[in-house]
Length: 336
Ligand SMILES: NC(=O)c1ccc[n+]([C@@H]2O[C@H](COP(=O)([O-])OP(=O)(O)OC[C@H]3O[C@@H](n4cnc5c(N)ncnc54)[C@H](OP(=O)(O)O)[C@@H]3O)[C@@H](O)[C@H]2O)c1
Image (cartoon, rainbow, N blue to C red; front, side):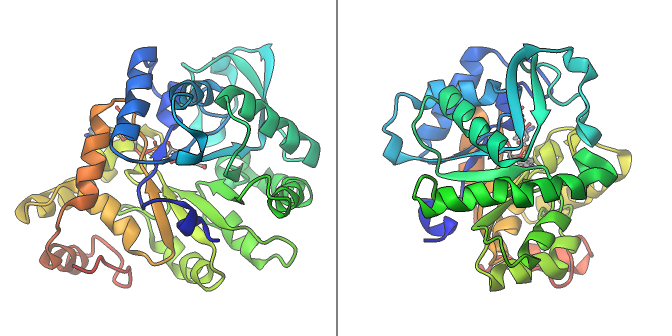
């Protein structure tokens, strides 16, 4: 069964913000956000040890403990082991994403994609999530944005470690699916070329959005479709700027990006379209995409996401977007 078939719909929820991304989120607000997701009927939750050094997993686990386990799909990630030992959070090396989780837990994290660390990471996640099983496991961030030129070494460690363990766990029925969870196209393309690894999908963040999709369109999306590897689009609002926020790629958005967003917004307003609807529906229009998983740290956002998915967008809007060169000429547009 594909990842698409395992999900009850095209909308999931990403919990990176619940790891105190950008700000310290009060406990009640975090819980109320997960409750809002549940109340809106969304049943796919993505998390990771990285998100606040286990904080997002702990919060998600506490909120989901009230619900029967077979009623939702859960994904988390491997590659960062959360230790009991604490460290100076501000001194953490998170590559281009420096400072993003400075309000998270102070627990030290170790980058390790070996077989042994993969199993230990899963054990830690199960404990924090208060569950006995994971549905999907993503190998997290084996890419240049975190590891610079060393990324291929990490990729190789994962290829001979995490990939093999996750393949075995899938064969044994312990997990249902695995793949990569990355902000870059290159590791996904590389994985698709391997004979020995058969991932079920990729959580591709920020690379198939209204603001950035050209690179993925060239090779990854057609190849993923051909190999029946489902794409889950993470960061569909480009980390906030497409939804009314001020972040792009987890940093304050540049004036150039803001100007592009303004052009899209102006066009959207002309056709009475909300920019959130345009963002989510654009990502979902590619046939390789199985789901979008916007993140949020405020309960009110979830009803907006659900409404954005249902909104009827006139074909003329998409045509205008294409004519003004705001999306790639060959990007699939939603059928109206
Ligand atoms: N490498 C990977 O595997 C990877 C990388 C990135 C993301 N992901 C996954 O994808 C998920 C989604 O990505 P994301 O959460 O980083 O970014 P996103 O979904 O692109 O954007 C989420 C942000 O949009 C903001 N937002 C939503 N509605 C808004 C509104 N009406 N006005 C202003 N701001 C608004 C939210 O703010 P509030 O917090 O204030 O609600 C939140 O910070 C993640 O949570 C994670 O699960 C995976």
